[in-house]
Length: 257
Image (cartoon, rainbow, N blue to C red; front, side, top):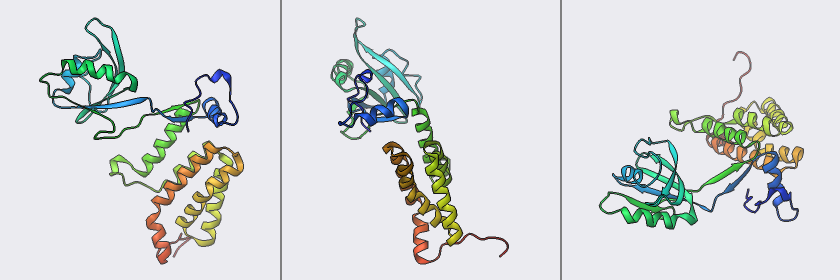
């Protein structure tokens, strides 16, 4: 979703140019956009922390991997050149800033970069990062739902070998569009009862979830969420699909065998 043109939300939505849905997302649910005006700089080298510490306004020497701090870049006379968010990773520092400010900041850094072991790389050179912005009254819930689902599918502590995400996706859909979630659950129950294949029931229920969502809500955003969940669920069931095709998938067992 792109809402870059919503520079003055007080004007309200304007129909016909795609802004009405963006405006509604920002005021009622959540909107996402790609921040093309932001740039990521990768600073590597053994002296990166000490060098940047002396060039900006925050404590970079004490910045541990996985943490970030805001920082200001100033001239010798304390005139502001630019601001950035500094992220520490294992082997580098990442500077995220306004693309228009980077030339001036880079010139200031290179003035004092003499014998230090520091290398500056812009995104697009040897790496590629993208900055996204999520806004709206339900933005926190949207981010929490996304990471809950992805964390279930790809848990770090299990070496990214997680579950299939069916139950987690059902919980997310209940919060986003509960009638569609109930319809998908009913579909699972019917298919499971008829075939006794839990995986087949999950695949059909997940595949129909975007259809149900559109039918009940007529909202593109909720339908996109359901489609995203469905695609990942189907991908995670690739082994089950192969077993179903070969007739080797295990069935639900009821009672004593």
